[in-house]
Length: 425
Image 1 (cartoon, one colour):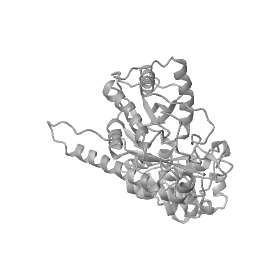
Image 2 (cartoon, one colour):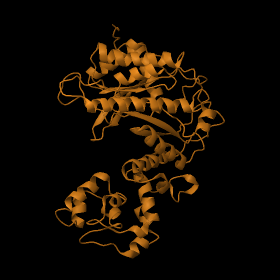
Image 3 (tube, rainbow, N blue to C red):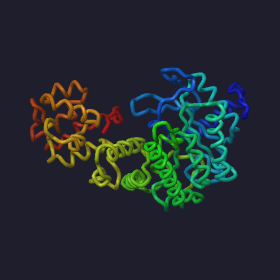
């Protein structure tokens, strides 16, 4: 049995400060898709707080879920040019033992600081050795201590299939970071990583997840349910701005990953310049708003029926406009398709109206079965009327054709700089 190490130990707090800070560059940390669980048996789950290693993710229903987000170690034998923890980087190094990390997670959980663990690691000795250490943490939490909180493990693509299979047995979600959208960029900036090996590992996880889900659906009454395998699926992360890939290439890779490996999420992380960076890297970080626009475009691909070509149409130099969101940019390029009659237009067209989210579209479709939608009904849904009314006709409103054709419409609808990240697609 693994001995639990108290969190109050000064050396453990020192390690936590280093390894929590080192984990902040990994954006692929979320808990959506997993059932809520509480090892303490409390009916309403546990709370959240601020502190070293605490990150906040959001479930689809809007719940804020707090996770302990750390690395097992920031030592690494790989020398990826874009990584602060690369082998040649002059940073403070630290490493948790399995017992320390298990004790830290349980202690934070019992104090109601967290609802789960996000665990990644630098590569030490070998991919198999590192993956085995990561799996030991998850196995000890689940098997020895009956931990029923959320666990997200960052897996290592070069590790043996058996270790990846065991990781999925204990974790709610697994992720393998593709890091860069193109094989050539990965070969140039991270020569120890194999683009094809990453894809093969993703395919292996997809097959195991599909098999477990199929067996779960076919389970017969009276028989024990088959063991789950990463029930919250798999995700990945791409770094934005570390290479010359434009937004079209990044979104094209994301669309391919969603289709080929049925990923739950692709995360985008703006490149952050690091000390002693390679000359192959850009000297400055890309605008954070670029990362935000990629997330909005990703949402359009997954939930709004857009294609990469539609999102990127008219984009200058292959980059999404920063002053307006990608759905508004599409609508302004296709003004001839508007206004849409909210009482007659099909769902797939209403989803393309700037300011109309998927949930409100469903509400409008349900409401119009009983009565004609009027402008006041849009206001009751707390929609931004100045944003939606140029593109919508209601029972008591039809926008002037001059308004849609006016060259100043873009300027009028573009958010002020202080509000630049507030608009959803």
